[in-house]
Image (cartoon, rainbow, N blue to C red):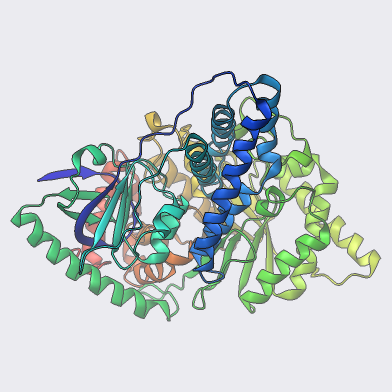
Length: 577
């Protein structure tokens, strides 16, 4: 029996057999070519061939499904002439082989995306790499592993790979696909999104699995914990059967909780909302609204600065879909590490500490006013609120509010209808915002804690750097005490406070957030049911008295252990006893 620990990426446990996809890492070495035009033509043919393959897959997928959206995203990259133009230019000017030029451009661009503060955008580095790797293989005449062959009668596979592209997964016999295990990949990659949408467990970041696994051997896969057991013994099989029974009970309980309002056992109402990236995403029927609408996608996906009208249509579409439920629009979070060529943003040595988000908007005021006018107009279509990211001073908040008022005055002068009393929120994601949260709370209508950046800035740890991953933990006492400071100051000022980072969806932490007094948890759509269920098993008042002891523990590991014990006490999840 072999046990390998990775990162749980999509929940569920499954017993199946191993199917290895042992493609090696894509590589290319520089060499001089004689016919530069013919070399550049190889890229054009590879793009056309890959586009045709994606189109054939796309025909089988329903519009609006995660699989269709992923394939569309790949086609968008593939069709981006601006991205591929430097590759062709380098091949024609330097006479280098096009596969090497493409590899270099892909790695440089993916590296920029990987450093982005937004985990969704950072994960797009993998999409760029996947598309370009597929092109390089075609240029080199290599044949990728064929996973499209049908499984045997009753056979279920867990596919093991170095990394797995969504289009490769979609070529598989889905009736046989039981799960994914990859050595690489992030928790917000498109492959993980696909696994969650298909309802199959997935584990990523499991080093050495390809070498350890043998085709056809039995595997037990735990998508919640990240554990992979190869060739299990009888004890492991018996434990798996118990875990599977518990997982089935949990799913039934989550399904029942989905249709109810989320409230703790002692009656504390918690709004469970969703994070959305664009107006085309589906809003679950039984969520409480949109706790975070990212707007940078409108800018990054355009070849020009989006107009007021273009933005208004996006925002109004989401507000209309919400049907009176809350929609919090986060203003533009771009700059430094998020590049839109038409904005001509300067490259910065340290983009995480540079001119981004509210700093950029206050610097480019006409750009900001255009967005604010669109947001105010969309306020006529529903329960819209506006939220400013990366606030680090009271001066920034006041200037942003003044510009919001100026945008309203411009609309009023033009005779354009808009919402004049739009609530204004502050995203708490810097240590500075934590320290002045009492002052910010007196001038804001609500807070939303962005845990992804708050952890990174509080711990001075790059979440993309594996060597400091031990520091990047929401359960670090410094982070939890910061969150507690924010919730206290919000309560004193009488304003609600939510959370829209990844930690909002962690069922282990739900009791903690309820006890701290958070009013709203905003999660990815697939996590709404589980989050509602977790909230419904918490006695927030009883746990609140234990907060001082929890926050006085020495480190993240001790706090997680204590929270696991609390989870068992309150029986937050079936089968956790």
